[in-house]
Length: 258
Image (cartoon, one colour):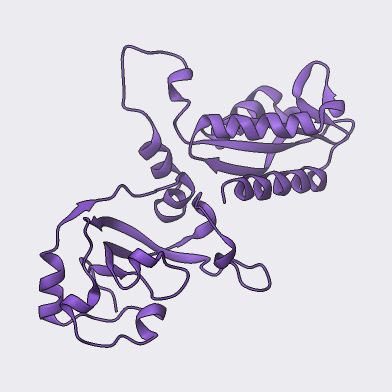
């Protein structure tokens, strides 16, 4: 069972899925946590061998990493530090190294590796506010407006507009969809007979640029239904229709990053 501070050694398999020069070699070292993450949150390069015969991704879940290292070239074979034969247990789980094996491994030269930490993963583990704070640029007094925030995490959102004469939805992006919804309702005043904005979908992106691209793609898809006085409002559009286009965009976006 993993304990805080445990390190896991990565060794190349002997199969075709590993490059010939990396087979049996000690490749990396990582310090995992016990926080489970989804592979869908990461824009990873994926090949045919990563999917089973039904088309499902073979490794849908993993553990969030605290730190990671790459062993320097020329790499060392596992057989150099251990005479043991490792069975499939080492491919399907974690096999503890003997003290002398661990000591020899830690003496090998290595360099730290930057970790991927998408906003979606941060939000799932630490909460949405933590994800937004982590990705936001440092405070500054020399820049103003939102353009310097374009690399900060942001949401694409879809809101239904209740009380309208015909079914309507609002598509947009924001750094905080809750704040945006609250602002709209303060202006619309649903409690005295006005319209009510209710968020039905929201997607957290690593950057505002990505959130904006999704917003624009959805609005373009429904261009014929956009209100002439507010081009972010779609008329004669219900939540089911929006959800279908929403899912299509996310599936296509993740396919492009394979």
